Length: 115
Image (cartoon, rainbow, N blue to C red):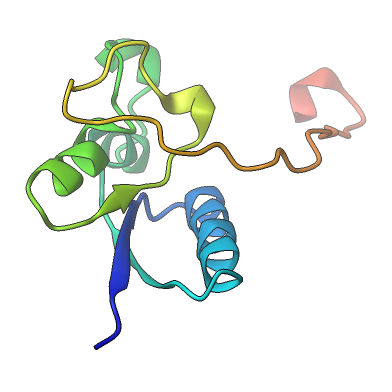
């Protein structure tokens, strides 16, 4: 019987891409995995066009993903480090940090207001 690791992640393009990178790293070691997509409070507020500074608090993009692990719906979570609150549930540990991808971005526009 083959074990499949369930990886909880947000459904955003960035989050899924990061989780797929973890899946690839696991598969290189012969470990099968599947993604468990979790909608977070931050996702819902973005969909409703509510500015994040209005909802405040930490963990708006991580709490529900962590809860999926704590509730047994997933075995591990994949997060962007920038979204992790400084305090996390004592039952959870940071087990690995992937190699950083190219961090460069560029915004291009004729005027600042265009951006």
